[in-house]
Length: 290
Image (cartoon, rainbow, N blue to C red):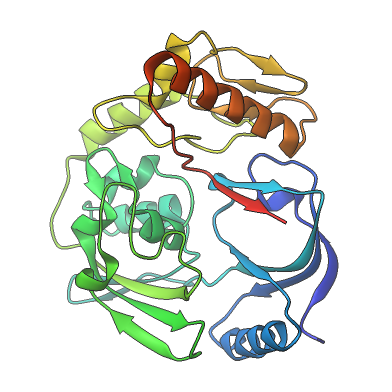
C-alpha cells in the first residue's frame, strides 16, 4: 500500500534502543490518518498480515530482529491545552510530563503527580498508570476508541474500562485503538511535596539510560525490585545488558545489548524468584514478538 513505509528502523521507538526493523510501518499523525488506518487494517485482513500498535517508547521491548508484518506508530497529539468546564481533552500520544507542565503553567495542579510519569496518556490509560498516589482511574471521564473489528468510533466510560491496579479492559486487548480521552482537572495537589518526591526518585532510579521503567509489576504487598535484590541479581550483567545498581527493577542496555540479552535477564529473575520465594513476576514492559 502507498501509505506503508518499508524496512523501517525501530531502534529509536523503544527506550531500550535495541536494533529492530519492521517490514512495513505506518505513523498516525492526525485524525485524518484514521481513514488511512482503516484501509491498512482492511488490507491486513485481506492479506492475512499481522499488525501491532506501538505507543510510548518507555515501556516497549522489540523481541525480534525483523518484524515481518506491520508496525503502526501512534503519534496523535494536541497542539494546545483543550479544556472545557474543568475537563481536559487529550489525544493518545500526548506526552504526560509535557501536558502536566502546561497545566501547571495555567495553575491546574491536579496532574502534578504525573511530573514523575514517563510516556503518553494513551499508554497511561491502557495500563491505568499510577504515580505518587494518582491513578488514571481517579481522573478518567471518558474515552474515544476506534473499534478495530467494526472500524467504528465509540465513546466509553468508566464501566467499560474495568480499572484495576496496573490494568484495564484495554490492556492486552487488540480490538481497540485509543484516539482521545477526557480527564477531570478540577481539584488540586500539593506541588511542593511532589517535587520533593521526584527528586528522591531521581536519586534512587536510573535516569537518562537505555532502559524502560519498571520491568515487572509489583506483586501484591511486595516490591519486584526488592525481590530481585533479595535473590542477589542487583548489578547482574549478561553480555551488554544489566540490572541497575540503583534499582533492581530496571533493566539496562548499557552498551550494545540485543533483545535476547534483556529477555535472558528477565528469565533469570523470574526463575530465581519463583524458586526461592514462590512468586510469579509479571512483566510491566510490553514485549512485542514477531
